[in-house]
Length: 138
Image (tube, rainbow, N blue to C red; front, top):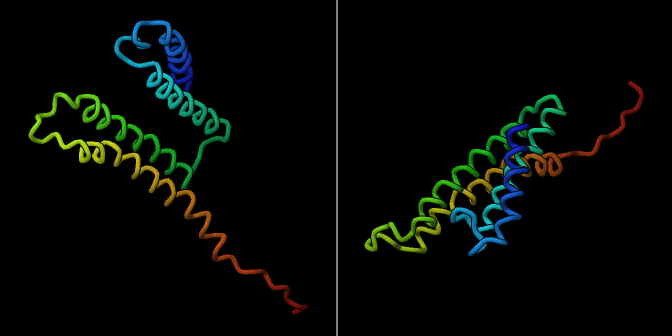
C-alpha cells in the first residue's frame, strides 16, 4: 500500500510536468495516459487502505477486488500490445475493428463480472425479500 501511494505521488508529479514538455509527453507517454494510470494506482492504494482499516475482506467484496485488479491488468496488456503497436501488426491481419474489440473485451468482461458478483447479489436480496409477518402468542 505504501509503495502504491509512493508510485501515485511520483506519477502525479510526472503527469503535472508533462504538459510543459514538447508534445505534452515524458519519455513518449502522453500526460493524459500518465494521469489515467496514476489515478488507477491511487484508487488501488485507497482500496488497500480501506481493506486494512476494515481488518480484511471476505466473500463477494474479496472476489470483486480480485476481479478488478486482474481484469484491469488483462485490459492494459492487450491494449498496449494491440492498440499501442498497431503499426507492427502485419497489414494482412490488421483489421482495426476486430483489434479494438479484442483490446476492449477484458474491460467489458470486468464490468459484466463486477455487476454479476456485486450488484446482482444485492438486487437478488431486495427482490426475494418477503415481508415479516407478526405471529400471535403461541
